[in-house]
Amino acid sequence: MAAKIPFVREMEFTYEEPQQVSPLIRRLVANNPGPFTYLGTGVYIIGRGDVAIIDPGPDKPEHIEALLRAVEGERVTHIFVTHRHMDHSPAAHPLARATGAKVYASTEPPKPSDCDELRLEAGDDHIFTPDLDVSDGDRFSGPGWTIEAVSTPGHTSNHMAYALLEENALFPGDHIMGWSTTVIGPPDGDMSAYFASLEKVRDRNYDTLWPTHGPPVREVRPFVEAYLAHRLAREAQVLAQLESGKRLIKDMVNEMYADVDKRLHPAACHSVLAHMIRLVELGRVATEGPPCVDNEYWLKRA
Image (cartoon, rainbow, N blue to C red; front, side, top):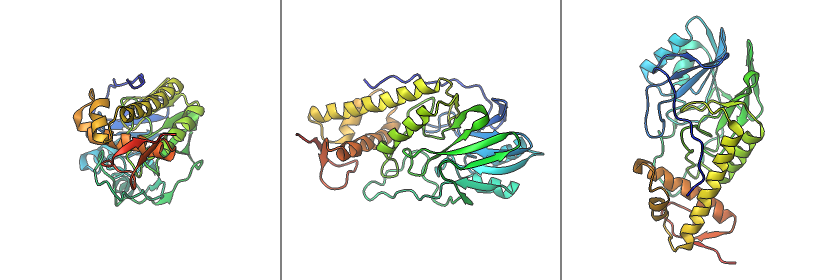
């Protein structure tokens, strides 16, 4: 069994209605629930008067209208995007055109795949390009609030979290979610980078995580430790599957994720692939050619 994570899944809200969730944070949940978005995309509005918006969500007219109502009479100065997936970034530029704000995100391009065409999650937003590049440690401010960019590659190569310094809180996008583990889909997703990013977030000792999907995480350090332990346990499961003679990832997933919604099994295959790539890099597993979902894998003996 993989390590247990103390998930938090209960959240009271009304779709497309802003809710004050902390002194500086309002949350508005888009009406786009699903197996990867959970209850929907949570959009965060920071501050009052001159405000920032984090992960504006899908490009749906009713959603953008709801966001504009939520900031009526205020000035949107910054629109931050954690990564270019269809449930996070598409509303950024329509919202920017309506408000005059600039869109901020990492401009590092995603890594294309040369062997797997499986579409994961809500899909990539291939046309998204920010107005301004964001790098690790960059700071942005408004009246009473300061946002710091925190590079967290792993879920995607260009994933950027954002810290609200005044509340010692982090908006981790899809890097860490309270309701579920995070999909790591190679080649843009990288398990080794993900481990390093989890350790980075853990060691910064934030008081609260506000994921884009689902409720906040209040006990941050033990939660992230459980996330790390879960991944290490999954890695041990992969090695055990190989030891038992299984060579195909899909066969491993059917056993390892037997209690998980089968709609998520294709994504689980890519998470197992991410572990497999890491194990190949560590010299513990071998395969022929570039590691792909349909390859055969075997243990390397000393």
